[in-house]
Length: 269
Image (cartoon, rainbow, N blue to C red; front, side, top):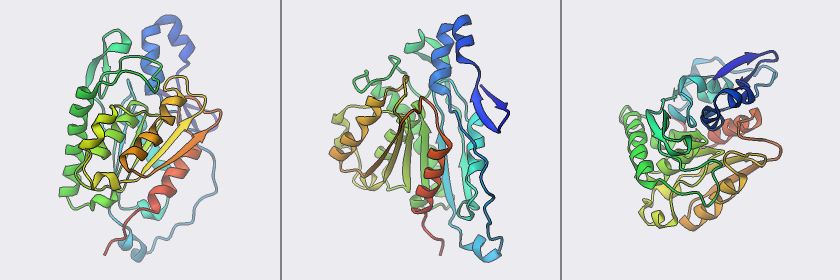
């Protein structure tokens, strides 16, 4: 779904041309589109000394894509994280299995869980049982990395759209405190009754939530419903609104994510 354009930016195919030929496919493209505006920045002067490398903490960043997308299509994101703190970071971009999706008339496509309607609003139906199954798979990925030696405090789960909703569910239900969860254009995928099932350590995991005010796919109101829900659960959330931004991710959001993770990385001993 990605094509390179002049000016070093990543964008999706023309959605209007898709609409003319296949209106059902448009829904998948919109939800799965992670549009990254890669700006030309001044090169960062990073220390290449063995000392700085050895002191960089081992960390793990798990990125969950949106509906109809794939993990490999999102891999360019990691190229923006150039700070020395990320030299010992392992990145993972898994792809969702193909499942029938209700909002796309039962069409099978890469999907972490079922979505009932588009646009997603603050009051959209929740597919909780589906979400919980997907959460188990994410937890297995995290457990594997922790077993390999990564401190849970250096594990960060991030996701866009449907992947953002799954990110939120995964960190809030994980039995340990993680480094953080970053939600981009996502929503709360379950009802408030689920709060009582959140482990106490999970409530200590900080959340970064970014949402475009002009989002017409996952409405801004769906994002705004996140902080009150998290406050009710006793979870710390930093919410950032981006005026004029639609259902996509901007370079500004990813720059914030980089600094946000850096301040939370635990130093190696």
